[in-house]
Length: 248
Ligand code: NAP
Image 1 (cartoon, rainbow, N blue to C red):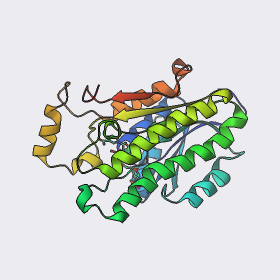
Image 2 (spheres, rainbow, N blue to C red; image 1 turned 45 degrees about the vertical axis):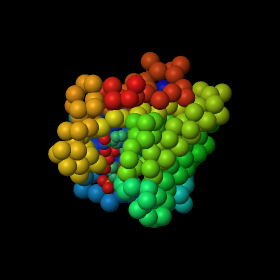
Image 3 (cartoon, protein in one colour; image 1 turned 120 degrees about the horizontal axis):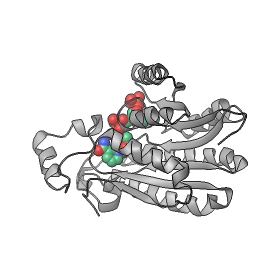
């Protein structure tokens, strides 16, 4: 994607876990990576350093994806007219698990606010830029839980199912500008998010996965790199499951 502005991929929540793997992988593909974090500045800076050590370019930004005004300001200050935004990966996400009967309003609202509303605002702001470029790739990290549900995760499942709905709607709205919008739906992946699960719970989940184990963050990054590439130019509005066969 040649242009006088630098070809940039924005990855939210890339200080660790899946986002970090996506940032490192897209940097290897030649993108300058803008990566965001919420609180773990040192981890985000070490991702930047790792990218630079491999000859790539990256910058880290503190951005709360639950704060829509901050997102709008970020796009205005750091993206618009400064870089060419070729790829947006909406990866930042949180969990606040609990059975429906006991789930607090705040735990429902926070998960929807970060995982769904924040991703929506990023998509809207990215579209303003990508529509002028008449080219772009938007990739939303959803979850197998948004497809099949999970006891104790009604808020998270609702947010991820909602993001699938936004993915499909945006694909229809943005297609005429050659902007593709897809989702990657990870199954259970080894990161901090799943590290909190007790060993017996992990073993129970693993037993349900045809491929027998949790996936790696790199498995998800490889799927994202494919959807960001020219090879996926004619794919839009799709959900790519990367779940070891857990939900087919
Ligand atoms: P993780 O290890 O917990 O990392 C979460 C990332 O999101 C961190 O970079 C964190 O920043 C950032 N973040 C959290 N709250 C934020 C906020 N309010 N604003 C901005 N950034 C925020 O999570 P992960 O397992 O890599 O998951 C990444 C994505 O994959 C999420 O959307 C998750 O729902 C999805 N997913 C994960 C799995 C899995 O099994 N792990 C399965 C399906 C889907 P700080 O480091 O600064 O806190």
